[in-house]
Image (cartoon, rainbow, N blue to C red; front, top):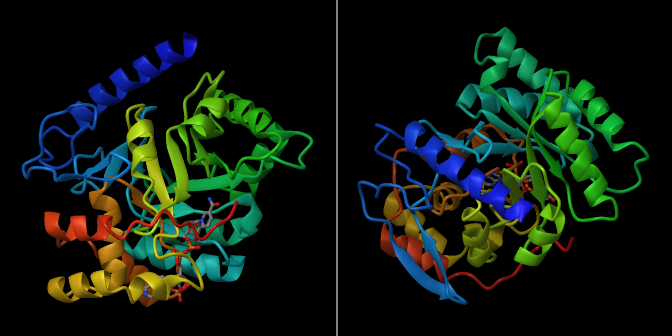
Length: 331
Ligand SMILES: NC(=O)c1ccc[n+]([C@@H]2O[C@H](COP(=O)([O-])OP(=O)(O)OC[C@H]3O[C@@H](n4cnc5c(N)ncnc54)[C@H](OP(=O)(O)O)[C@@H]3O)[C@@H](O)[C@H]2O)c1
């Protein structure tokens, strides 16, 4: 009961906030029934009755989404998995120069010093303010004695005063303990928003939120044309939760499966864009926040250069038909 009341309040809040933040943007709308977009959203059924729709909370003009806790999050991010502190510093700095405002890292990646240095360099050069940058990071809920101390240490290692979004990295033994610690850290202002990662079904979501005081604002999951999981997006979308997509290109070692897929290459050719840009833009048009990973400055610039074109309804349907429910990650 407590949970349903909390969800209803969250949804009402998100709808009210979105109604205000989108006023005059002419772009995004609420999946909860907000005003229709200027161009009609397409909607098709392919995955066991689940529909995909361009009708989303993402505002493609401001490049922000208002989360169910009222915080705003940028809608394209840089992923830093496999980057050490040295490469991360440069990638983060290049990304901020190119207009990225969301950086994804994790305690496990061990590159907090590089992320911090890249952000500080951009701040020192007047490219961004701390408040404009949104740092998402993660903790694995296993093998840690004191989760609150781990959060504080992670915050200190990033050196940016607070963590914008903290995820439970994946499901493991102490997930509830970590969840409670994140809620407490939010109360203390150390963390601003709560996220969960690698939760793929309503059952998994229900279990972790069973006694939640603060509902997740974001779920970071594997997501690309071969693994769309649209029914789950619909389910959590009804609760104002945003999907952040990892492996938007399939992840290292698999990118050619997508970059070389005939549907993607044909669409890219039609639009005069690259396959990477088509894949990022597709994520935005289905209402998800992609975080492509790269340490190549040219790729970093290319991956956010996606705001001057649009996939047609027919192109969106073609990509939707690529779904095979196949994930590359196994955790
Ligand atoms: N929550 C989790 O469990 C989890 C799991 C995995 C990943 N993640 C997060 O999600 C982010 C994204 O995933 P990912 O980085 O593993 O995989 P990805 O974004 O699907 O693909 C990254 C690969 O694509 C290449 N690439 C990037 N842009 C390109 C472009 N424009 N043209 C050609 N190649 C390009 C990169 O190489 P270059 O460096 O040469 O550009 C790299 O090899 C990660 O960095 C991490 O932050 C989270």
